[in-house]
Length: 88
Image (tube, rainbow, N blue to C red):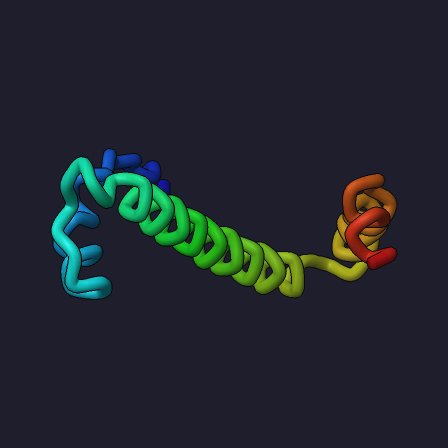
């Protein structure tokens, strides 16, 4: 059984990265800049995690029997959100 994903509050943890990346200290004068930096970093981490999970899922689907794999592909491609995303 896989270990569940732990979620941490990284708001304070990214302050050192912010200083290293921007040369700025986190204070009340540039808090909005830090918040934008924080949001960008969290969004990037989320995207990277989603991309990794998607890749792992596709690899597992590839090893399923053909009929099951075909049904999963049909379910995914028939989903309205997937159809909307593939139109663009």
